[in-house]
Length: 253
Image (tube, rainbow, N blue to C red; front, side, top):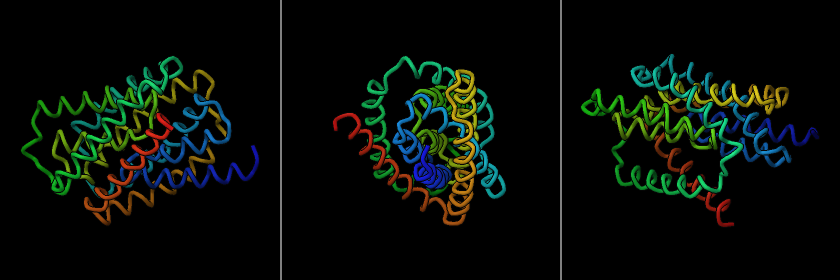
């Protein structure tokens, strides 16, 4: 691979790490950048996972030092996510992304409307929503549904996790982001185990990108913790808008 392409991928990995640490959705930068090199889609997805798992883990550690993740959801959700994302990765070669994109776009538009029309959502915790039934619903949504999506397609997983935790459990955006990182580690590991066993990971390239991903993730996590839920909310809406545009262009362009 030419040096110029490698440098572009390293920069994309750093930017993806920053976005992922704040609101998720780093795959919007990293995955297309890898695919622009001409790498087959399944190998690009696999290498993206290898790089991302390091950045996600790094961000999770940074959040753990300053804020409390919801372990009732994050730990069982992460365990389920390993299996669900692995199943998604196994199915990735047989299910076309064209089938999933319209559904994902509808969900993203609903997310954007929900966050816009409820400006107080995620600003402060809503502990009255944290019931046993809602915890079970959040574990199932994050550890099964969103995790499977991460294995089969991927971009925006962290964003979906944050929205699920704020909407279902009433977490503020910063705590939701901290919890999302733990489950996102599980989704990345589950998909990576399958992709690695199938021989799709470009290990050397992925390792170099992982270093840059970690650097971006550390910066993003610290900015989110310092600036708070309002900052995360703005970045989240920006990422959702970019995702809708990009998926629409892929579907109809």
